[in-house]
Length: 114
Image (tube, rainbow, N blue to C red; front, side, top):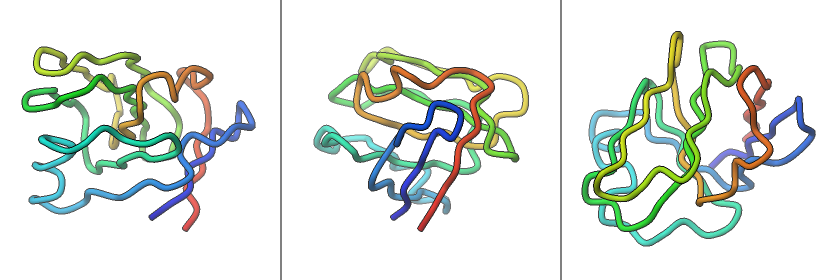
């Protein structure tokens, strides 16, 4: 589990974020799971885009590059029909409860701490 901070905004993005970094955990993501609680997230890497098939709830998705700089923020990605692309240089995405990325903007610097 990691704590993820938006250094540029001075705010915590996720207090407890799991990491999905192998074939199975990246494939599974949040499909068929219960909604994320406040402060939770899922960091998927590598990842440049996401789909919302088999998802039961909307999420915010924060894409970032190899320097942990935000490349794109997709807010309120809808379950079942939503799709989001991270833009040029995206290497990972943090999936968050809807509304949790309200302060995150493209170009912000992220920090990951264990």
